[in-house]
Length: 555
Image (tube, rainbow, N blue to C red; front, top):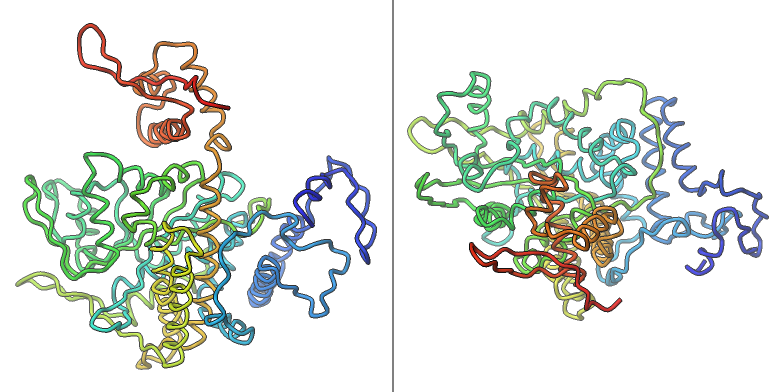
């Protein structure tokens, strides 16, 4: 079905007849519901009445079916649509214009099927999270499961690559519109499992500055440590063994991107870039704190945001040129929003937290306190890569190189594509480490082909997600901030209080995330030539930068 015909078949209008399709029932605009959305809602509700083992099996099969439909594959071997209409894309705008994966790296259907048997923890977590936060996208729940594993490992698993080591830390940005996808609810589901598993000591506090971040990671007590409450001191004692191996879970991830642009936080971006590489030693020297050293760095970053908050940052060249966005998994929904009411009360499944706890505290060894010197690195386990996995890994790298060399993606995406194979082996490592926990103690940690197959399928989903974000970045900011934009333009046309500070005061957006939101909208309006900012000098005093509607802009 073309875009034009979809527009013609609006709710309440009779769709075009299709050969072999049953005549649709007449509907009115008031009771029109797309079949996919209705089916998803009914599916999630019906799952609540099934035994746990049946829920897991059906949820997994449902995800496979949904992924096949979204990818354009026909789930029916006969190819018939059974009168259900065109593909899922009829109702969804979640496909992307990413280039096709070169043939050299494509997996056979049997390999994909084999891969979906790996990483059982991810499926177990998704069954829980889709009940606890049923309106959050399944892709988000999958991603949070990976972030939980990345946090728990804390630099204690690696893959050898020449003279270097690759560790499975992930940087993750999840973005979806507010309300429809209940991002915060899904985020809180992951936090419940982390806390229940006893991993709170691996989490960084909110709102750290570049200086306090380095202090947190360097195993050095802060100057006011003696004034801390005893509970906080005890928590710090637990944290110091993993001082440099931490996770930064942020409930509004765009705030971090805004901090990178603030002059007094200029040191933060290069530090975050280096922490991703898990360097053995990062030295930082400041006039106030002197020299501080982060040893055996390992940082996981994970947090949700909205397209409106993220969109201006996607238009910041430095974030692409510096390799910041190349380090991130950029995650957007690949399914339509569904409405599901609050579930009945139920506990967090203890087996989820037990699995993560066993990985973090039993299978992986904790570092030992050293009273005579710096804390030694966490004892790390090498994940062995089988020859078959090495071959598939190499082919996937070849495929990404082929796409870049043929310039099939914009140049700013070349660094992202250049790291796809690295992210894929990180995910394979996480899946293998999770499955390793279920084996008898003493077994080696091996990345088997099934782990790679599922990791490649996941990273291909994230590659598509990256392109959806790029397409979203081309949308005008007015699509989600139209009310604020209208207020700003109206104010500038009718008032002389037109500095950023005056607007912030009058709109009650002086501080915090509100001020960041206002600044982002103003910057985007300036970039789109809707507003201009000029430096105006009065008869006395310093010059003031003031905003004006650009009357010369062509409509």
